[in-house]
Image 1 (cartoon, chains in turn blue, yellow):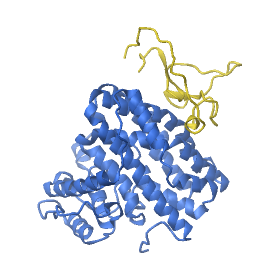
Image 2: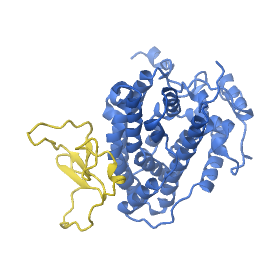
Image 3: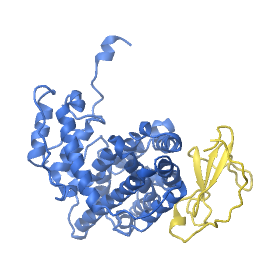
Image 4: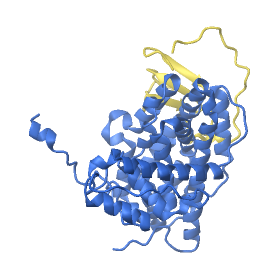
Length: 351
Length: 78
């Protein structure tokens, strides 16, 4: 490979997050500064005074700003210099926002008061937490009565995470050892299709989007989704990016997998009810089988294995699981309320 | 987790049997069941809609496994 080839750093079109529209003073200042040039020409503001008791899950300005700062660690943003990723003011602002969001969630998430020392104990507690989440279900709604337009909206919400499916949890791998690490690799390899591009779950999701005439480009719908949809992603990224939260990211993955196989069947059933074929349902059919495997490994070997190795992380494992369930419930309640009212669950975006 | 060359089957409490390794799953008339992934979960509650694989139904149909499994004092190598 010639040095000229190596020096070309521009990725293929569409692989970066399109620069979103600002949603308030903080995101306006941050996105404006990021797009204006590289670090060194300007610094990002501080958000040290942010109040963790305000409803940060629903805060459009905070969630969008955090989402974009975290995106610097994934694919980057269009028209933003990659050097911002490790700029000290960008890291400081991300930490301010993540600390406030984490404190907010720790004040809201209820974690069972249990003793669990073995991997089997941990799996049992996690299966118990995920079973008792009798919250609103988007999947049940899709199975029974969603219109095609409502189904497409649900997929738009999902696309924000599913187009980088598995990536936030992959951050955990170098922070784990032994049984938990092996389990993480076993699950994540399957998420990435065992290295087969067309089987990679993010690629399967793109196929579903195309089958519904939706845009399958990375980040295509970030402007259209509300804060709570972004919050389901920003929590994953914050738990994945911070090594001290390795308990929380494993607990999150366990809860995510444990609430996936049965809902995935409901999504696929709803799509078939609407006359859609395998190109649309394939992603969900795959998750019925895959996540019935993953939930066992994630609960026992990953989260349980981590707690056996580092017993003091039990509380964080359960916090991560509880935060996953809380955010999913909040998102589902919001979207279902919009559908019940006969309105759209998406934000109005200027054409 | 199993040795590379062997097959290991894990009895998940109140759940499926996880199969790791080069096991051939065959029908009663000898046809091979397609495996889509290196580790599969076999239904043992009887309720799965994608048998022989697990689809998580055991979590909602009250399936439980007995705790009285007789174990030998040897363990498989990690």
